[in-house]
Image (cartoon, rainbow over all chains, first blue to last red; front, side, top):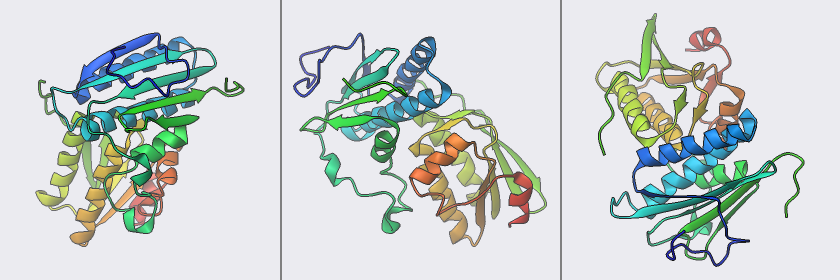
Length: 151
Length: 120
């Protein structure tokens, strides 16, 4: 994990698997597939895998497209842990940042036909916690498996 | 970054005046695939003049919000052309994505293809 990553708000802050990718959706897909395989190796069920894959996909796309503006010179830093009780991930981009509180409600009638703006909602629905750093460049998420307690 | 081969990601069949579309990708996932799928869907309306389009999700086990964006755009194109879009055969996990985002209020969704065909 590089010094550039915003770690200040992280609980614990250690991730067993770390990846750095350019702002390339194809490479993000490789990371997503790696995570899926790892989840299967830990016997996560199909619903849990679906939930995590979707949230990670949305976060990576946000980092690449909105954070890094698809700039090939900018990178996305990813760290994740998988235990029998939980999956946690941190994703950082090198963009200008944003305020997630300013994302409009995509379910509002006036926004329903907008093509974008649903990623954050889906992340919050499928993960137990979604937390952004102050600058908005880093998102930390975790998902507790059924019956597991938050530490 | 190399471009993916532009294979058909859609299986298209005309049943009467309804164009039924099945997806060849079980996971409508990454940005590159989504762009191509979108182009192929839009060409049905823009270039091939289809006005009744039925999307059958029977082969789809995963999709992201980028795919939803393409369906919204497709729906707008068809409405503008006085056509209609209907979705069918959506897996419960995928249907949940439509429900969370309230897009089940925007789209007409049927469980079975036969009922969807009759709804046009």
